[in-house]
Image (tube, rainbow, N blue to C red; front, side, top):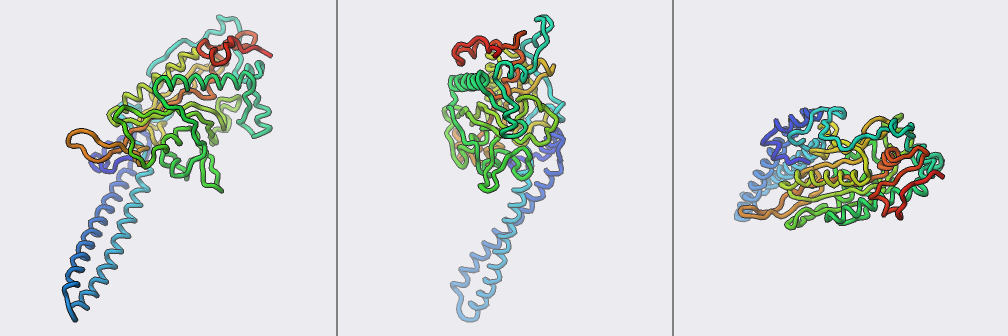
Length: 426
């Protein structure tokens, strides 16, 4: 959540952030009102509590009828103190509820608007000209079936729509891709992690997901646990309620996990193949760093994502995501979208988000302040970014296909797939 002290000092900045997101800016005023009520309640409680302490000393010194009269007043005052404490707690709880509804403050320069209002920062590589190659491209599912890599029919038979089997070279290709991503992350100083895919509600909510209303999340009601849509959730919760040491620089983890999304509201969208599915695998970068270093770390995460895209030899573009499409936790987000030939469009393969101190405040993750005149602890910044995921297979198969339906393996991937240069048609 945001720092209410910052909001109190500069409410217009937060109203502007809400406007940029196309969200309700009156929420800012509701929080300010709740904050004023809370502070008034706390002040009243503290005043009454001081009076109660003073009365206690007078009672101890009094005798006879005076003492009895004071005892009656003390009893009445105690009831007032109890009521004031309850009022203060209620005001605090109300403010907490409102604060948890307010998204992160968007950073300066983020485009305003919704999903379609992104800004293209750059394009890298050139989409393949299949006309020049002399054949019409097949889509990834047709290719996947020709080379024995994807089985959607049996996935649906076993689990329902939007489920699939990766088999043979399909399974090998995904493992190779994720292993290459993990090796790159380790080389960059990330600690590899195999993370839980079921988390407690406080972890899911602390990361910034609305567990009460988010239709994308799978919940195991009997156990009150949630299936994660990204290992970011588990990695964010890893240091909850801790003070971490950042004196040596950012603390970086690379999480390998299966991920689950209900894809609610996506009926009719990407129903063919493995572009939009309920379960997939992913290697996710997650960083804890100082507030001052967060923007630079965000650029580093983006550079690592682009390094992976270069290794699989895909043309792509980088977009600065508009405020209304950032989600609850992100203050800024960059997406890398690869060209998918049969869709004649760029589709998201990776994203990286700077969540500033938003998640850390919710999860109580802090660092000790260093330097002259600095005391105590403060919230850290958290960032995340995708290095590889199942969806990459879509772009790889389509971009690197051959006229006969076989697929040329990108050079950097070959050592991870036993030197195989081509995925042949069966």
